[in-house]
Each structure stands twice: as C-alpha cells, then as structure tokens.
Image 1: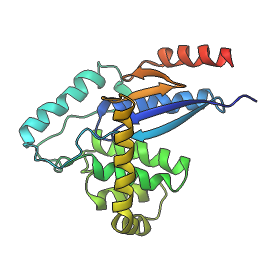
Image 2: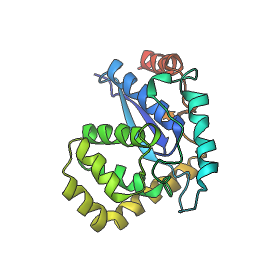
Image 3: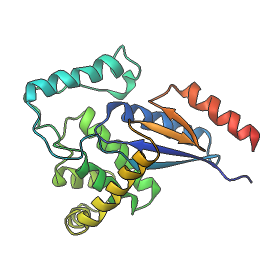
Image 4: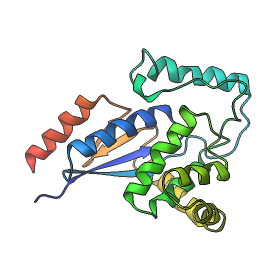
Length: 209
C-alpha cells in the first residue's frame, strides 16, 4: 500500500475560516480513509494579549455570519455574532494553541475532538477560549480528565508554548502568512476551499502514486 498523502494545515483557533476548513478536512479524512493524513500546525493570528473594545469586536463577529453563516458558505456550522451580554472575547491566540498542543499528547482522536469543540465553543457558544479553566472544561467535555488537563496546562504550559512558537516560526520560514493554509505534498492550497477543490487535488496526486 502506498504511503498516505500528507495535508499539513496551518490554523488558528480564533480564525473563523479555519473552523470551516477543519470541518471540511475532517470530512475528507473520512472519505479518503487511509489515503490521506492531516497534520495540524499552529499559526498565531494574535500572538500577544490585547484589549478588544466589545462593540468593535461585536461588529467583527457579524462578519462570521455574513461570510460563513446562514446565506454564507458554511451555514451548517452555526456561526453566531457575539452579543454584549456574552463572555469577554479571547485575549490572544496562544492559550488555545497551547491547549491544542496538550490535547495532541492524548492522541489523534482526542485532538480532533478537542480541536472542533474548542472552535465551536468560540464561534457558536461564545466562550472565552483564552481562559485555562474554559479550556479545561472543553477538554472534559471531549473525554479528557479535566483536573489532569488543567494541571498540565499550569505545569507544562511554558514548554508547550515554546513548541507552538516554533511551529509559528516554521510557518513563516515556509512563507505561510495567512490561515487556513493547506500544503498537500508540497502544493500550497490557501484559504478554506470548497470540498471539490480539495478532492480534485487529492485525486490527481493519488493517481500519480
């Protein structure tokens, strides 16, 4: 049997189009079972904490619905614009990226559950996914031990942060400057593409194997 094709995906938990791509790529992985392998890597849209005025942030989140909600390209994902009474916006990208890195240590399936649940927690449920306690709650909801996860965030967070930052540096070294970005066996595919676009490239490469 030939080696599976590798799709390296640069993504950020705070990127709405990364959520769209994640759902589509999960579907492709099921369709091409054993023929493709998805490798997720972290890109930090907001590496450092910064204040987000709530009214300006609410206006920004309305774009989620316009571009990818009802009437947009991915209405099934349930994007909702933030409201004044919701929790505070995430402060920056690093906490969720660290938590995602930690979820990886529990295996591919655990990461996949945590990955999508964390994105849904942000874009649909409006939870503050830069809060370690919220991230530990999500870990518990996806089958991981909450206390262990929260403890490891505290004790291993510095090491995990270095790993995340190394991936972020690798992205720039590979001239990845936006997300989502998929690299399929060396071929770059920018943005969240429709499923037929991904399928066409995968089928073409599989035919050459």
